[in-house]
Length: 242
Image 1 (cartoon, one colour):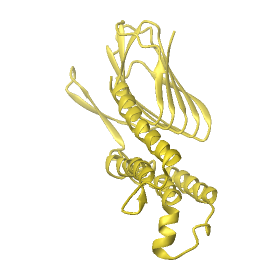
Image 2 (cartoon, helix red, strand yellow):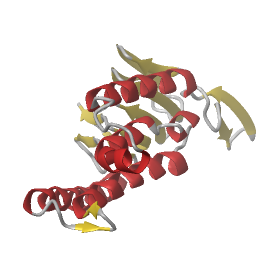
Image 3 (tube, rainbow, N blue to C red):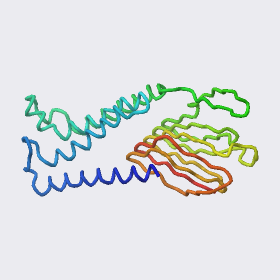
Image 4 (cartoon, rainbow, N blue to C red):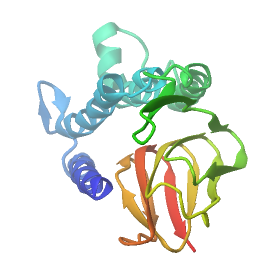
């Protein structure tokens, strides 16, 4: 599954980061172009993090998620930056830098999370040959705890969670004429989203996971299929069946 491949990739990245820290502990003076080798390793992680957000972001807010990477880059390279630009490396406390990054990050998502590539979801009804336009981003949660109830008679759904906890339930699950496959697009960041799935449904998980966890019970066969897509960033996505 996608999230398993993503975990393997990030495991390799974290191993490289650990190598950098080991080099710092064993031989901090080992350098290339006057920059300690351990900072090359950690700097590469921060650079990947920054580019992944700026280039690979799926929303405007994700494209602008640069504050934490830049903050950590400053903390990592502040001695070199002080030497290059001639300022006191202790002029800004690292904790102040992280606090500023956190505030700007939250402000960014509160303002720009609504600016997505598309604010509507088009559902094609093959039997009637009609096109129904539905609002795709109605179920949003930020800095709170809430429950969302989705209609199992509809084939497509979207939920978003930022810095909070969101529990997702399905209604009308006993109706026999419902769609065989229901697609749920999840956008979870810095929070927890719990998807409650009926015990007789199958689950197909294609969530793109970075710096977070996707876990829970996965049933491969069932009377209907819930197809999970979307993203999980620095958060937890739990799948509970029963």
